[in-house]
Amino acid sequence: MSRIFSGIQPSGELHIGNYLGAVKNWARLQHEYDSIFCIVDYHAITIAYEPEQLRARRHSMAVSLLAAGLDPNVCSVFVQSQVPEHTELAWIFNTITPLGELERQTQFKEKSARQESVSAGILNYPVLQAADILLYRANLVPVGEDQVQHLELSRVCARRWNSLFGHRTGNKTEDGADEREQFFPEPEPLLTPTRRIMGLDGRAKMSKSMGNTIGLLESPEEIWNKLRPAVTDPKRIKKTDPGTPEVCNIYHLHKAFSPVATVEHVATQCTTAGWGCIDCKKVLADSIERELVPIRSRAAELAAKPKMIDDALSAGADRCRRLARDTMDAVRDRMGF
Ligand code: AMP
Ligand code: TRP
Image (cartoon, rainbow, N blue to C red; front, side, top):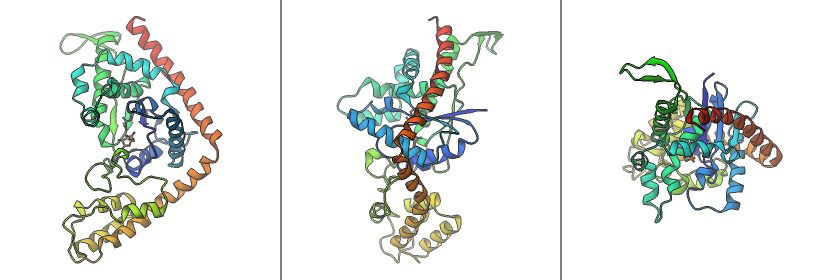
């Protein structure tokens, strides 16, 4: 069975961008693949943070992931820092990754532009991500579109390491070189149709750091207070102006949350100016509510059972430590340690 691996930072609560771009897909895929999902707390410390807050956020991310449908009896859910081999393999990949490739990463450029002093951790962030995936020799990585460039770097790490340290197979490649075993597979992204959810400001991707999110566990009132002023088709000034659904972020959210018939109805009401934007948002709020009610109630149940969460994470870490140790034994052997 192919293996999938994905990770999420414990940086505040899960939002509907994370959910639609990644986590909802994970809940489906866990039944089709050998699945490993990781709360990447070592990635989260590449920006300033409070230790107590990190502890709390790790726990609340686990609650949200299980509430959103990950079943620890079906897949492995664990915390990155509980498997030290992640940082060990990251160090090894650092030694074979050209600096230029890290400096070219879009997320590095964006994050470093926002900060006065840029740590080496921000630069090396995608190398740790490559180690996360390759430690389990995962083939597929379900993520949102913003992670595609990082995954390209994971493939480069795999390719370069294989060509330097993979055992010689005894065959020759097309260009006459010694063929090497493909010890690490080159992982491919698995994207959803909602690979990039825009924020409620309609300008940037939905992201915690932009303050333009809808949290998965927010109350209907909180969600409505955010939806009501959310940006729609900028050309639609009056209720009687016909709109263009494809340019409206609310329409795209309808496509993610509303049944097909509702989406079609919304488009007709918009293009004929039958509804105003508030009417359209009310229907969206209902659709979001339908999807989030069961998640919210599962989260409330799980939050009352901290031991169950801790047990699930520790079972996940036990399994992952075993897999990680096997990989690192082979890596150390091939690298001369
Ligand atoms: P992060 O919160 O940055 O750790 O992201 C966790 C997962 O959610 C990754 O797979 C991201 O690609 C995905 N993701 C984050 N924001 C969005 C968004 N606005 N639209 C779609 N996917 C997203
Ligand atoms: N960089 C990812 C994000 O910000 C999180 C992540 C870390 C990840 N390691 C990973 C995603 C491995 C997929 C696979 O969303």
